[in-house]
Image (cartoon, rainbow, N blue to C red):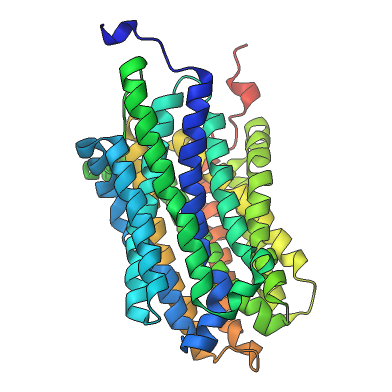
Length: 427
């Protein structure tokens, strides 16, 4: 029977696909964020320094600097379901190695292998969603997948509450994260079965992947590079902070591990609710560069408030949560206004690659800063150098968003400040 005569998959079948690939993302995000609530336990039981902990989190990002170059190639060569399975297996092998040994080198190797699998898994899941939902409910499917992933982070950061007894030993929370990471393989296996069945019975979309095309790098305008710079400094001010957040809250502010985990998870909670709402707002009013400047400004005081005042931590974390919801909702879609459609894959791939360079470097830098200041429960002032680094990143973010706004207000504008759903609508 010719492929063109086959029916399209039913809506129910598509949504079943979404559920199982989102299950894989839940497991991946849980395993990534499982380290943060454990930082002080690793320090007490294994004698790790903050530099060691920064290495364990930062090394996850190291292979991702190259993943965007080879991830699409692997999917193209091996096929989507095989690639998804390979990446899912890496997401289990990595946490298994990390949980198996109390030696820093072995744990770092585990986190490195996990990083190789997790970001590639994300690429494969996005590719799968594009294949199954393009021309249908693609944006909603992407949003639901992201929500599922964020729920994995939320569950991990709040694990000191629902798995309190596990924190008596450093290995037990890692074993819990290993159990959740097995969902990466479960999701990939069920997807394999569903895709094999669908290829025989339904007409599926083409597989497309975003790959970095280096000759295109010289064709991007100045505005694009301002957004890339903002991307690097913004995420470098958020995720490396989360690496040490629970330990910082406990040692500098005397919170319990449970309260510290919830405070850190507020960023995830805000992003799940606020990002789509801010997306709707910016579609209505424009002012994209101005909103990115406002979001960056929110980051400047929050770290200094936590370092020098005793104000309730819910205030600075709520401010950070607003920024974490606002800037991504504006920043990533803004690239599509500046870069032509045919080069968007390269633009986003390059942006992600440079972002991971920042995450790798600043996780190491903040770990070093905490050790340099002898940060501990007996010396909470030792955290201040790291907090100043984060605050300065907020200043730098304001600077780049200001430069972007200046350019968008001039003759080289791409419409970031003016394009709205009303202006885009037909007259």
